[in-house]
Image (cartoon, one colour):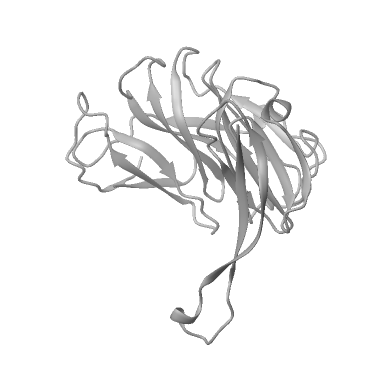
Amino acid sequence: MKGRFVSVFGGLFVAVGLLTAAAGPASASALAPTIGASWQGVAQSGITPPDANGAVGPNSYIEVVNLQIGIYQRSGTLITSAALSTLTGHSSLSDPTVLWDPDTQRFYYNVWDTLNARMDLGFSKDANPTAVPGSFCNYEFNFGYASANAPDYPKLGQTKGFLLIGVNFYKSFSSASAMSGDLLWTSKPQGSGAITTCPAQSTLKSGKFAGLKNSDGTQAFTPVPSIQTDASTTGFIVASSDIECPPTCGTGTLSPYSP
């Protein structure tokens, strides 16, 4: 795998809104966000917290909550909404995340399939998705976890060539503490043109860096990869020292990590 990853460890409606920068004199103090349009997001009943997440592209905004997805115009007009099971083909889902990549001009998403410890992930075929699942290429990746395992709290980031997913790895849902903080990765389709035929999953490479460590030798907790939009092949991850202490205790001394 090309590239280097550096980590600096260190029923509800979800309201959605816009922030705009106020025009003013060319000084840092003169610029401030103001509240723009706001609207009610997709509904999610029976599950809390909703784990709301979203990403904005040139023409649309995608919102995800635990079991739902909504696509809006940037003004707030709903384009379409659906259950995440419609998008992924699976129903035991949790912790969805979504991002916009200006390089490939498409949205990417990830959601944890809790039934088999896999990640359901994919990307929009172009910059303007309008249908679920038709506007997306959808895949399920097994990163070497057993079905009873819990790769919890997945957080999505990216570099120019790769999607990155940070997780806390628990041996089972009843485990009192995480076994490790892991970084999962898959390659991304290159090029910004519209996709008419989704690439075969075999053409997308994937892998895992298991057991990210702090500088004091203890495990990293809740690794979150950054969402990078430049051409650099170096990725960054931020994590904390393990808060589930004991049995895994650290001083919290943080330093760069390069697998």
